[in-house]
Image (cartoon, rainbow, N blue to C red):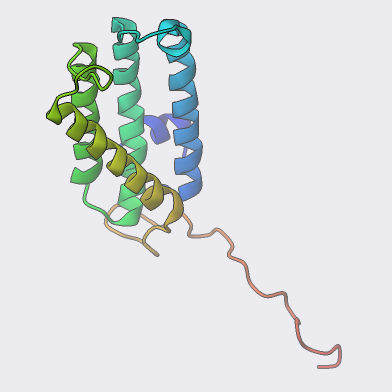
Length: 165
């Protein structure tokens, strides 16, 4: 699978290795670019507000993160509503944070605490599910097994036998 399909296609399946590579790349790029567009949020003293550039950057990374997650959830056999629902929650968080409605340092609202807690729990669950658990064996309704044709570890030929038979 090429990078364009991996990051912007919403069909098919990917394995854990592709998911990890894509997500590490996306997170590293997102953090690096965020440091460039809003250095006060990373290196300044005190609390820095989210800038328009930071918000647009977060929104732009939401599309490839969703595409990669949809394909991995397809491999796991989960309904597609799950990655889209998570992305909708992230979109809500990004927009509310931009307008200053997510303030966990001052006097946070019950809604903002609940949203951040839910996103944290879901993020951990997604990392465990997509990053560590094998996908559906064989083909499913989203396509062939991405591990089909990948050799699995087998005992060495002749292991345990003597040289004569």
